[in-house]
Amino acid sequence: MILELDCGNSFIKWRVLSGAEVVLVAEGVVDSDLALCESLCKLSGLSLRSCRMVSVRTAAETSALIDMLERDFGVSVICAKPAREMSGVRNGYEDYERLGLDRWLAMLGAFHLANGPCLVLDFGTAVTADFIAIDGDHLGGFICPGMPLMRNQLRTHTRKIRYDDVAAERALTSQAPGRSTVEAVERGCSLMLRGFVLTQLEMARSYWGEGFTVFITGGDADLVAGVAPGARFVPDLVFVGLAVACPLS
Ligand SMILES: Nc1ncnc2c1ncn2[C@@H]1O[C@H](COP(=O)(O)OP(=O)(O)OP(=O)(O)O)[C@@H](O)[C@H]1O
Ligand SMILES: CC(C)(CO)[C@@H](O)C(=O)NCCC(=O)O
Ligand SMILES: [K+]
Image 1 (tube, rainbow, N blue to C red):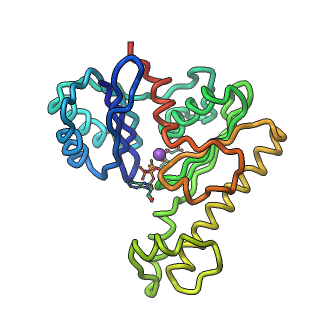
Image 2 (cartoon, rainbow, N blue to C red; image 1 turned 180 degrees about the vertical axis):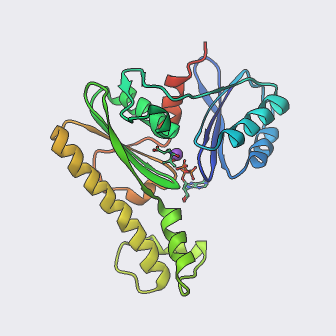
């Protein structure tokens, strides 16, 4: 069995794969190393042969997690590393090591699947867009606050914006102008994301006409559903790239 981990800023996405046919055994989203450990311990018949991970956390946080996995599960951990070029994609950053590894892997995954120009949009704690040309050249990208950051900034910096998660979820069943604070904020922020998608699509069209593939991933991908008809929703895009970057012999 193989354990795969995508350590983001807020959550750790994990999954366990098994066998030559690469069957999904189990998967989950947790908010701490300890919660990951508990989830894995609950799996019956877990026998890990290897583990590969990508992390956008600090080196100290990442090595603490690696230590825990090696100690508690007796598995050696392979970590995705920055690269100037890999699998036909050329990192477009002036300082290639500074490009977020989750973005890099999502790009590797996208280019692997599309084999042509692509626009990769990731809706997590942060929202990112990346452009990859037909020859695999990464043209660069954009980073902006995601849904959790936008709503928390409003909550933190105003006195009268207060509401709970249940109300937030209910508010997002429509896009109509809000008639309550929760509706106004949740729908407003969701429109920011939808507008972001439209702008990225415009830019991609200006480069490539209609000949490109849009990939949408990340925990909040649902919020932009329908904005880019024809886009490919690939929730595990980072894992697709992880397999490309860290093949297991
Ligand atoms: N099962 C889930 N558990 C937690 N969050 C979820 C889940 N499903 C969807 N989400 C949404 O995913 C968002 C977080 O996205 P995601 O997990 O892609 O990124 P992250 O790890 O927080 O950050 P990063 O962008 O650094 O990877 C949250 O705002 C939440 O609304
Ligand atoms: C932008 C995030 C937070 C998205 O998860 C991550 O890719 C990251 O920390 N990147 C480093 C900065 C950069 O990509 O320029
Ligand atoms: K991510």
